Image 1 (spheres, one colour):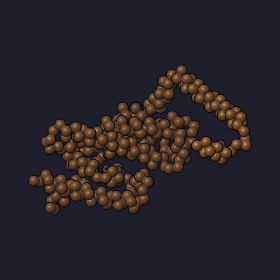
Image 2 (tube, rainbow over the protein chains, first blue to last red; image 1 turned 45 degrees about the horizontal axis):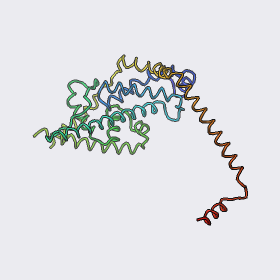
Image 3 (cartoon, rainbow over the protein chains, first blue to last red; image 1 turned 45 degrees about the vertical axis):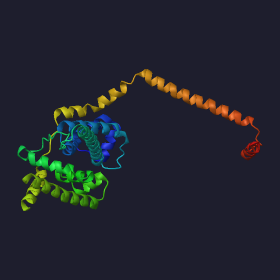
Image 4 (cartoon, rainbow over the protein chains, first blue to last red; image 1 turned 30 degrees about the horizontal axis):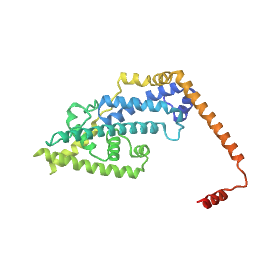
Amino acid sequence: MHLDDQSFLELSRKNKDRAFNYLVDAYSSKVFNTCINLIRNREDAEDVTQEVFTAVYLSLDTFGGDSKLSTWIYSIALNKSKEFLRKKTRKKRSGMMTTLEKDDSHIVPTATIEFDHPGVLLENKERTQILFDAIDQLAENQKIAYTMHKIEGMSYSEIAELTELSVSSVESLMFRAKKKLQQLLEDYYKENEK
Amino acid sequence: MNEERNRAEDTMNVGDHVQRVTPSNDLMNRLKAIPSKVKQGYDTIPKRVVWMAAASIVLLIGLNFLSLNDYNDSQSDTPSTETVDDSYFSYMKNV
């Protein structure tokens, strides 16, 4: 069953739970993939997806159809994923500070999130992890634009709508992200050749 | 130099091969259970607490009305001819 936004709004007014069930069926896979591509850990992505849908259910009454339904859900997924990653980064930083105080030895920061992405083929796992580590070093908006476009397969206009930026801003973000990634990866391989 | 550039490009292209993941049945069940869990959350607030909160609000509004009445009475007791300027100058004279 596919409903356009107007029919969904009518259903939502008549029967909130049925409308919510429709949303779960129609968007759970997309939301979960958005979360897992940004978080890269199955368990954490599942928890964040649950948070996203809880937020959707709680604010279903306030959704008036001003934006597209898909944009509204995606933006909640994006914000929840960002929130989760910021919390993780904060924990990682405070952990590093403790280690610095205890030990003067050279510290190689390790990712706090264990890489567990079921969508990555085994033969590509190592290189994908290198790519994702490099993506993590990009500025947050570049990281989101790059992941959404290259991994999720979203168009520039879809990303622009979601991030409330102009299409040209997204293009420029992508250009800078690609350039920076290329540089980061070249440096990585240079270091590892030695 | 060229080799590193090629390896970097190859690695960037790996992103195209990341496949879509199907949510597990467990996740789907958790998502479908959200409405009942949210409603349960509302039900678990004890009725006594709800009544206490309602009574507190009524009491607060009542006290506000009483103090407003008192204030109005005290305003009507003071002579209407005295303005803010008068009271200010009389205060300044005393100083």
